Image (cartoon, rainbow, N blue to C red; front, top):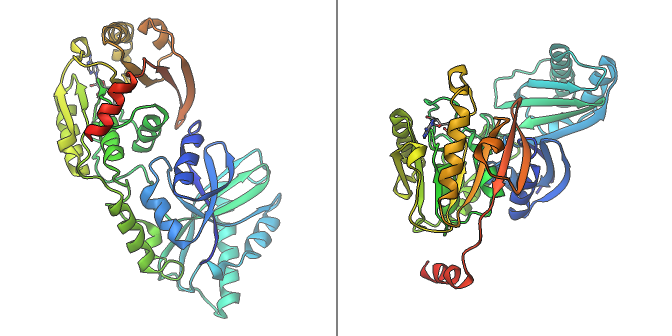
Length: 389
Ligand SMILES: C[S@@+](CC[C@H](N)C(=O)[O-])C[C@H]1O[C@@H](n2cnc3c(N)ncnc32)[C@H](O)[C@@H]1O
């Protein structure tokens, strides 16, 4: 087995959740920086990380990391990497993305072309050929330069991991699947507790919660670029990672998950998405205004992403909407609420004081994740629930 250094980008502010996921997979974390976790593992772990991780955006295999303050240094240090240990002679290699922060080198197109040139030169030397045909498997590169340190990662995922394959994105302002999963994992919600999303839109929170409850790995139904890396990852590694994921599923897990939205088209989309994700039997979706929000049982969880004024016309409605949500929540006996929004006056209008407020970047959008935890159920009730399962 070869040992690879790997990097997984994630949402800024949610590195701790990704760390927990990696540790649960038995992987060794080597460093954490803003929006990225570094870890190491063998070829099998490239497959496992792609199939199992709920909160990572992609899995990069680090080819090298070095200082470069000039294009000459960028060329020479890229060329010094043992590219033949990663790429076959016919590899189709290119830099898909280059970003630079607080560094001398900053022109993405120059960075891209110099790195590509250096790799082609090195492959020609290592494989003793005049040309590299680039007719084989794809090895897309992602390059980040921070304070003149260049890190080159080979992207094993391809399409970003938030694309599980169940969502068609037909509704407006959906939360990303990786962000929804990470936020659920930040709350104390477990499958034996009720979960309601009163602004469910395309159903992302309820669907991600159902996938977690059944132990369905998010990457089981999709493809990854590294499936083409026959030189590094034997096919059996993919089979073994998939069968490990299948063994961990609990198809009989039952839970009480509900998604409401005022918009019938959103509810239709949510039902279709849940069905594609294979969890439609676990979620009750219903067209319902937040003004009608209630639940007869105690100790449930609201996890939600209310409107935040994406459209100008919605802005004027936000104070009333958040006031209503605050009132309805207060009327629900012993419930907890966790809410993500970029609406700056959310707390004032909800009329509640959060126990915690986490700042999370959703792309360029600064959002807040507010926690309003309620009491835990009495111990006896919790034990009964466990023994019922
Ligand atoms: C930011 S979106 C939620 C997106 C969702 N998390 C997803 O992943 O698709 C807010 C949702 O609130 C819904 N909404 C707006 N006003 C509402 C109300 N009064 N009651 C219930 N839902 C409402 C909108 O239809 C929209 O789908």
